[in-house]
Length: 366
Ligand code: M6R
Image (cartoon, rainbow, N blue to C red; front, side):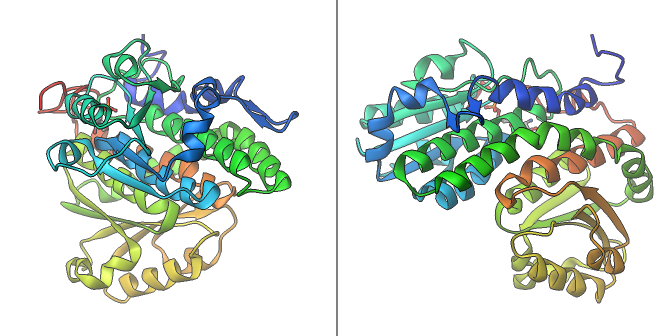
């Protein structure tokens, strides 16, 4: 049932190229320069009239929501707020009929997310679901939606659900950008073609597995980790840290790289591994200077870099390469080595990778 892998988590990490293509199959039509998502098409008027989008989710799905915030605002120029479902529902939030709420949930059974949906509906908002489990409570409760086609995710640590959620949300953002005219037709086509190459590039990123095991072996006994990223890759840093915490029980924090100097930099010493997402596009130079700051305080740097990078290589203790892509698609690639790093550290520490202590696959209690 684990398809020859030692754990479901590793199987699911390796399923990502197929899971991502399954998620855009029939929806991403690059030859016709079209994105087709019935749930969006049927409600296009509502999407175009919306003043803002509020995303509600928990855990890894919340991280996918944060990535989506960057993508929606950049491509479709729609203001987005991302909320922890548990905070949103108890806060007396301001919601109107002009709001669109997107609820993201792998299981479709998360109690707080479900309650947030009910609250938003009671205030007249249109609620759109991004779920993996067909017919789940959240899928049924939402007004419309688009499924991720990741297939069953058994490992408690979410992997392929995350990358397929980002895939669906990117498709929605591209469709809305086209409808709103915030993207040119040539840029739109370019994004579709690039998105189509992602499964192959994920496959390539998975090939660093051997090297990642070497890195895991060096740092497995660390008691703390920091994860840093900027822009589209800031949420990936949060997700990398969550993955390490939940399956290895090592304390880890994710931060936007520029926040370092506002506090966390005090933690840096020669004992502290810092995983920095430093891919070529975006704020690359800024990230390089963040790396220099860590280096001068003797922190150990594991850089996630674009294939062929030389700058970071000179400064970092280790670099793990991912193929080049558009900045807004890079989270789909930079996430892969972080999943593998936590996986291997957890295995080396003899943890119960698929069923970590204190955790359940879906949190149906409030
Ligand atoms: O099923 P959901 O996507 O609603 O679940 C949300 C979180 O409970 C979930 O992502 C959790 O954080 C995972 N264990 C993370 O790996």
